[in-house]
Amino acid sequence: MRISHPAGKILVGVDFSESSSQALLEAGRIAGEEDPLIEVVHIIDEDLLSDIREYSQLEEAEIVSSIEERLKVFCREAGLVDRKLSRLVRIGHPVRAFSSLCDEIEPDLLVLGAWCQYRNDSELMGVTARQILQESKSDVLLVRDRKGNQVHHVVACVDFSAYDSAVVRAAEVVCRAERASLDILHVFYPPWLSELSIDGENGEAFEDLEMEYRALLQGRLDKLVPREKSLVDSIEVQTIAKQFPRHCEGILGHIKESGADLAVIGARGRSRIESMILGRIAERIVMNSSSSVY
Image (cartoon, rainbow, N blue to C red; front, side, top):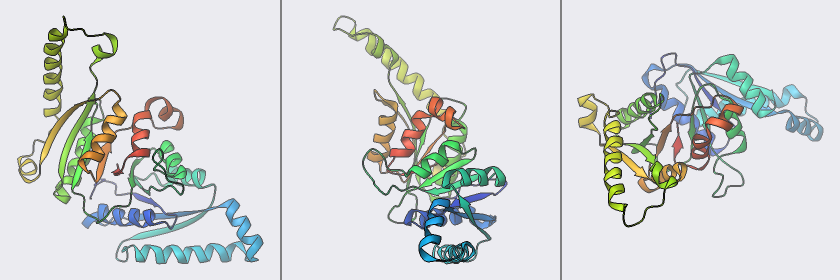
């Protein structure tokens, strides 16, 4: 996938896991032919460093030097030999140190591997990645392991907000590069169903109302379809208005059922407090999606 950013600042967080290797690979693919500088960072947990010093009798500088060499090899094994790289190793709390670095570098795109050591159905994203995501002011691409590197199917999740155009545009760029198919998805639940009970006498009236409501939604979705004829002719684009009682579960269900490789979604929250209040659906999708998430 190639998601372009004019300033070309890409920051990749690495913890030497398999998903980190995937994140590095995606960063190189996103950079494309423009070949911007890719900042690769590993944060050494300060508590872990203290334990290593105690049991290994090595000096801090020796430990850091060893990890710097490991990071160099890790980037090479991920296939970033010919890319412009800046490798950074810092000491600190993994989340606080990484967030501080993001404030310093101000990347346009942050790329992270998503993994959880104790993986279960309710939490598919690691705790550190989740906390970094909550505090990030940049766009974030969360990469999950998948078979093969090509993106075949993308789901753009829209809610008729100011974020929709950016969401569809990002999805469009990926589809253009990968010749992937695109679903523009809106999950809804008719407001009157949660407020009223429908009996046989007025059911027909509500059927008419639902048809009108769906037509309205479909009209708004159609306006989001990319208008460039060369793109529309080259990839499959469909708009989907899906009725489901809970928005998050409806989106996650479609991602899984469609076999999507990537979901693109807008997140209103830009700080931890804001994300708790405004970005709950986006956060739950990122945590539980079977696909990579941008």
